[in-house]
Length: 243
Image (cartoon, rainbow, N blue to C red; front, side):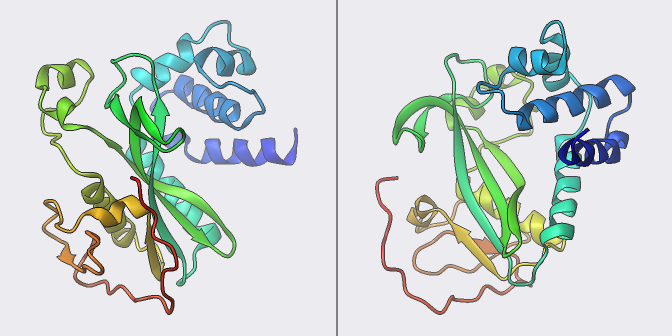
């Protein structure tokens, strides 16, 4: 067993209590090991083969019908990241990422801007929050973006397993929720950086009641009232456009 294997085993064993049965604990470890492996194309079949499974059924069941909380797991990851990288001058970085899809069943999939190809693609979009310091960086939060064509079609949402209470939220509003979660979890940071596309919104969309506006330069970024944002001692030299 390599040092990386031992470290991965220690991590997956450390979150075993998030899963109520032994089977999902084993599959979770196999899934993470597969994602971190050098398998060139990662999907249910290739990860299952990497783990020595005869078919992808166990991986697919874990992801689609398994009883476990992604939010609880993400909270543990955030806690581990802060323990390893925490710094009062850390930076919370908000950006979105896209996953290109071929069908119409994946939750949130729709023709949308894709940063990887810089054109409209049939894809899912996730708003991601990462944490970076001089010691490294890691993702600590995410929100899957649901276009209005999804949230306005409740039958389609129910078919995909989306609860009825989930309503449409803009990506800037989702970013604010992620930053608010980080503050509530006492993640130490001194700066917030957002992708250029998030600065295009001059008027904020509806935001959680616990937030108060901290608008600067036309950007629809808002923070909770007890947290003050500082202006960095520099001027922008390039404005990204085209989003």
